[in-house]
Image 1 (cartoon, rainbow, N blue to C red):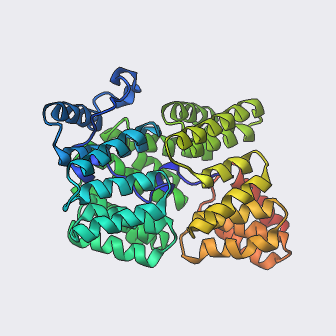
Image 2: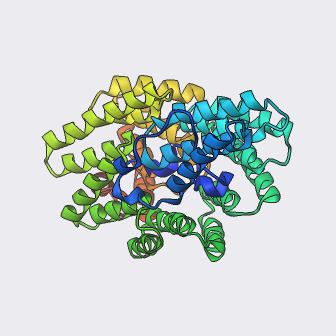
Length: 434
């Protein structure tokens, strides 16, 4: 099983905190010494802004606007590094802002807490906080961004589209364009999404923004099976910002799809050392297992469980990633339980797909079928979703439907997984493809 990009699933879109909130960072509990950060972080503008903000708060500890902005920057730092240890610092800074100035206006702190709730996968709480921020300031583009992300993950696409449009109306910059493009992609309107990203690229100036937009263009090409265009976009992004890890993830994925095994493994090893998130560790493990390196794969899965434990210690949780880990370990009953709980909380297409696949793996394909269909209903062009649907249909004896959806998976992206793409081709042949 080859899962979704770790950088795009947990939050609908991510942009630099500088773009979203201005100055970034927080005072209070100091971060780990900056020399302990990976080499790629040296000279990072977000790191510099955190240090500058800490200095500002030493001089003016009552500056509630800086506390709010800098708490939000910690949320962004956690996203970039995969370190949930930043979450309590972010929470403390944001609550300090509210303590100093309960409002109105308090929309910046509330939007920051909403972004933190999104990062912790408490999307219902994120929606509540975003709406509270909007009630105090109906012109807060940041709050509408948080609301868009929450509604997207809660599986309420019509409301998410409306919130993204409102954000575009208020501030038609990169954060709003990002959300609008992702919304279009989720509805299968890939060409329109690409046009928006191309528009964003024409206006991007900062290296981090250029890297981010090239990453999104690369992902669009990757999901569409255009490996050459994807590699070109990822390399262009790295030329702008060599430390932007999602671009290196894209290249590692391309190397795996292209049979460049040594390069792929080296890429994943570096990535999981720099950003040991559960989904990335599981992805690395599945690649290792496909190469017959079972012991190394198991070590990665053990680290993925440790990462989930660390996320829980930071006040977060990710039952979807936990379900994927259980699937990778062959614990189908646990995967069904975790994915079922997540589905009760939110009706996102990725959750429907994961639950469907867990049910299928547990021998409950009839129960899986409606969920697999729900995962495809919004229209997103996902080879993985189409593959899962086709395999479930094949298990239920519907060979015609299985041929259609397995062929669709390979048409969307014949390289979508070094494990599942060959399985899709074999299954299509067994289903009687001509």
